[in-house]
Each structure stands twice: as structure tokens, then as C-alpha cells.
Image (cartoon, one colour):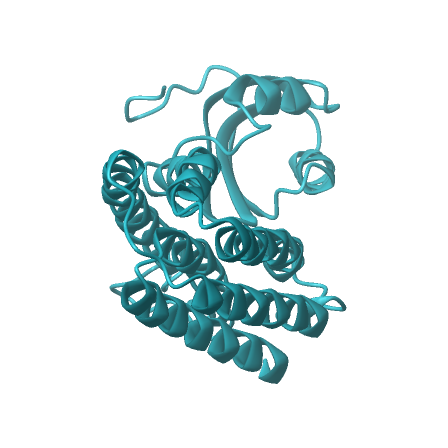
Length: 278
């Protein structure tokens, strides 16, 4: 947790500095890099939420606790990011038509500083076992490359006087950032809407259930997730033979699929659901 907090503080600092000096120097590429680093702040912040808020137990009125806090934060962050990128793209197009004055030395210094911060942050997280943090580690390494490109663009502006390079860098980076933001938005929406996680379908789960010895039929199957790494399944099973053995067998097969929150209703032949079963 300590290394995570240090990495988070370093990235918050570099985002604030890049926005400040981006405005002062007239550099849109620095602001774009700040938005890119803001994604890291979101990822690291969400990971801290996952280790604190999401760890709170369930209550009688919050039966899942705060497990969806991760998805809610990611959803809001992605919407804000994509809105900011749309505005930044508009400004970049204007700057291509009417190039603005850019203090190239500031772009160079801040680009190198952001590169170092991202590289050091990635180093702090390189031994983490948490899947989210391992993903953040790789993302930080990618961001270091992004920041290095900004610094190189600054050198190009300083040596040639080509002010349009700043706007061109923004327009080159924006499609990638929008795609990354869209993927996070898509995944967060899927969790909030209780869609089946990627790689899982009710048909897939039904096939696994029917392959278990003692299961004659399976229906009312639902697959959803509470967070990026917690998948849930509920189903009605018509069973024959020893129900306890069948239940243990089915649960073992589902756990092998990465599903650990399992709710199964066992039914005998001729049983009809009292409620609507889909």
C-alpha cells in the first residue's frame, strides 16, 4: 500500500505540473500528456479504493458492500477524460491553422520530468501481484514513452521553430487516448449494467453445468461481475442422485473457470419455479 501511495502522489504531482506549465508555455501536448497521466492517477486511485473502501464488509442495506466503487469511479473518470480530449482536439486543430507561441524549453523539461516520474512509478509497482496494479505497471511504462515523445517534440520545436509540432503531437495521441478511455468506459458500463464479463456467456456456463454428472438440466442462468476481478453466477439446476456430491462437483468446475461467488438452486424432476425463470 505504501508503494502504491507514493506512485499515486508522484503522478498527481506530475499531472498538476504539466497542466500548469502547459498553460503557461502554451503547449497543448503537455496538457495532453497530463490527461494521459491522469489515467494513471485514476488507475492507482481505484486500486487504493479497492484495497480500502471496497474491502468494507456488507451491511443489511448494502448487501454487496462497496464492491462496485471501482466501476463507478472508472465510469466517471472515463467520461471526463473523453470530454477533455474532445476539447483538446478542437484546440489542436485551431493551433494547426493558427500556430500559437510555445515555450519549447518548458516542454522539453516537463516531458523529461514526466518520463522520469512514470518510469519510477512503474519501478515501484513492478513486483505487485494484484492484477490491477500489474496492469498499471505496464500502463506507466507506456506513459513513459508518451512523455518521452513530448520531450522529443519539444526538442524539435526548439531546434527548428516548427510550432505546429505541438498540435500535431496532440492529434497523433488523441485517437489512442480516446480508444483507451472507451475501453475503460465499456468495461465499467458492463459491470454497472450487470452484463456478462468478457469471455463469459450464459450459454458457456450452461454448457459447463450440463457436463457435470448428476445435472439433468440448467436454467435461469445469470453471469455478472461486481468488480474487474469478481465474477458471480446464479442458476437453477435439475439434479438426480446425491445432490451434495453434484453441488460440490458443479462448484469445483465453476471455480476452475475463475468464478468464486456461486449461487445454485437445486430442483428435482417435475419441480416448477414459483417465479418467472429466464
